[in-house]
Length: 417
Image 1 (cartoon, rainbow, N blue to C red):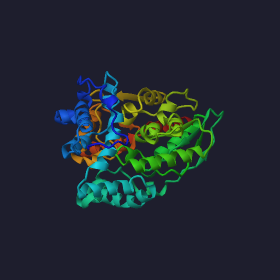
Image 2 (tube, helix red, strand yellow):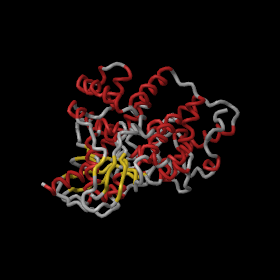
Image 3 (spheres, one colour):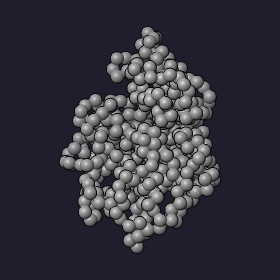
Image 4 (cartoon, rainbow, N blue to C red):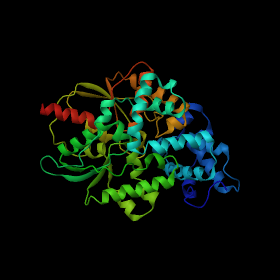
């Protein structure tokens, strides 16, 4: 059979779909190709066929499932409330259990999941990526060249300064105790984001704990169907933060991580996991919903805010990052009005597993953002930042990219200067 009986896609969710087509214009792959099978409702039809049939999972089914970015724009657009996110998250592990991937695909996935969720391995590999950038990623053979092509801009100085304080007291009257997930890719490639997150939270009255463990929350594996590894990482993440003691929130600065952690109840299936998931917030979600305390100084920039899919669609966090940025004097906040909800093509490791579609979407998004006339872009997800940085540069128009919390911290420092 196409699907086994361990956490199969839910029939009751399939039945919520009335095939109205509201999802079509928001689906990146349908927008690219106009193929019904590469739309959410088309994939829902394929899932239904798989549940009803006694036939094994076909290569064609897997192709259309794999082409889905998991951006969840269809969930936002659906008037019937179809939880397509629950469907595709259950389909992907079934694919990995029942489909024999090619030798190349198996090797690529092994390389990605053997490096990206492991900060120490990433730090060891990073000098090769830096060298690859300088040489030109097209000159590096095989899978390492592919990884170098989509890796973020980094210097050896960045790699030498990746330490973080594990405990920072609140400045002034304490308004809460929070734990910060340092993560994997964010910790190594975007260490400045994590430092700005810790400093800003403390400046705004939060006591911050940033434990070295866990190394990774399991988001990359969870969103790619590597379910056993994702569950193991989820349990380790829950245990690490529970060991700190009473926390008001568990904070993440990466949209993909927050999306996964808020789904731990579904993934792990225990009351403890559900309780943990209910405490998870994105740093922009937290800071954008409290009254600012730290004085803000001017940051004279025209900034276009890019909605990361796993923040806007999966977590329904849209206004809070904008509210946070509006507290910064002299910062002009711009909006991308052209296809704002179409994914940039990063989608975790999608741009490496589906490089052609990922690149097409990346160029498309980069052009739309550049057309706003912004001086800089703000994005709350490392995958989006790396993807769009690559395509801005490929278009010959490099645009500085910041996490929103970096801009807030710059503003706080400006006020203190």
